[in-house]
Amino acid sequence: MITTPTTGIPITHLADKKSHHATEAGNYFVANYPPFSFWQKEQAFAVDKMLDSPAPQDVPLGVYFHIPFCRKRCHFCYFKVYTDKNASEIRRYIHAGLAEFARYATRPYIQGRKPKFVYFGGGTPSYLSVPQLKELTDRMKDLLPWDETEEVAFEAEPGTLNETKLTAIREIGVTRLSLGVEHFDDHILESNGRAHRSGEIDRAYRFARGLGFEHINIDLIAGMMNDTEELWKMAVAKAVEMQPDCVTIYQMEVPYNTGIYKQMQTDGKVTAPVADWETKRAWVNYAFSEFEKNGYTVTSAYTVVKNPDKIKFVYRDMLWEGADMIASGVASFGHLGGVHYQNQADILPYMETVERGESPIFRAYATSPDERFLREFILKLKLGMVRSSYYQRKFGENVLVRFAPQLKWMQDEGFANMGEDEIRLTRDGLLQVDRLLHEFFMSHHRTNRIV
Ligand code: SF4
Image 1 (tube, helix red, strand yellow):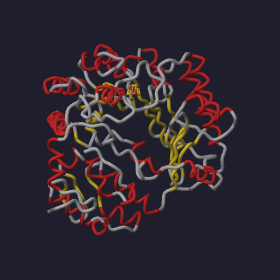
Image 2 (cartoon, rainbow, N blue to C red):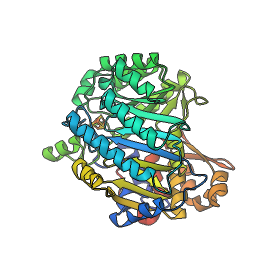
Image 3 (cartoon, rainbow, N blue to C red):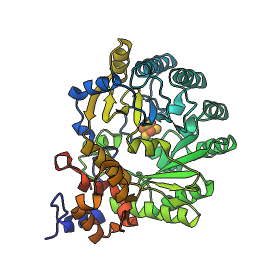
Image 4 (spheres, rainbow, N blue to C red):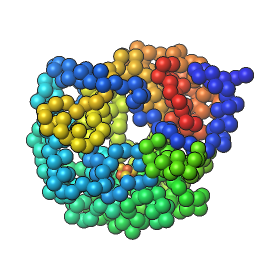
């Protein structure tokens, strides 16, 4: 019997799963390495220690600020979001986040450095009012100036945008506006708990285009509840017609802390009411092909880009290559000098901790050099192509030798093609890359994968 090189799972079994597996609860998307379940409270001290060390000369710095507020909680959402906060509570949160940010800005490891990228994520950053946005960004710039910043990325929910707010977002310096569109069909948007409708998408996109943002991305999700092949094709056609600079397409996953999972528990169901994995891959594949026909390039497992020479992903690429990133805000993820960390996940204890002048970090992971190499290899495989010479130069590792069994298996299964120097995923491999990445994890880091 042929098995995968590292898990010993029979290939026939995986092939079955690959073809016919219904969506069950759990995380599919590999966001970081080592997995979050290995991060520990006991390692939080390593962040503080790093902050007291001298600033590095050649490591880029980025900044992440988390806004945990939304108009409504989507049924598939697994983030900690708040839909009931008033203006004074939001102001208190912003002040807490800024106080946390100031704690970092004055420490030896950070002081004097200027961010290369800034990212506002959530939640819904565009939920903030114009005065709140201005206060937040003015203070952030006072603490760590943006004059060397190459990218300011900002996530937005279409229904929270009007011309005044978009103008303010543009004026604070945002270069990459990412619209959480997800789908264009109003019934699908409504039945999945989204707050916006298709008319708001059109309006927000038109305004944003007129304001000259350098890079407008729209997010889509393949396989939402009630989606059908016909509706998905219409959504893709609409996205092509809009001609955004970039489209990010996710495959619907149903993590445990979602409304969908809670409903599954109530109904005693194991299978989520969304498309199965084979269908989701086929739909993403269809979308990729349609965009390619219209001049776009597939640049990763999730993205198509209109002009790859112009459109850069500074946040993603620098972070994957080991940049430092200060993360402020509840539940946010940061990385400093090889130490990953995450903040307290509930807003009230988060604010109270920061207001007492204490660190809100609740878990961290200090990586070894080998884990840093693995992380960069694993994450960059999501781009669909990596070069062995890059890892030889940067880490002194020959990936073709180190991962020979896994790569041979991927080649035999039709998931990858090998050149002399390059490892290139096939379209089939790219469409299920998050499942394949587990093959490269250290054995003690392997946890359950859901497909
Ligand atoms: S808009 Fe995004 S963060 Fe907010 S509830 Fe929906 S999925 Fe979650």
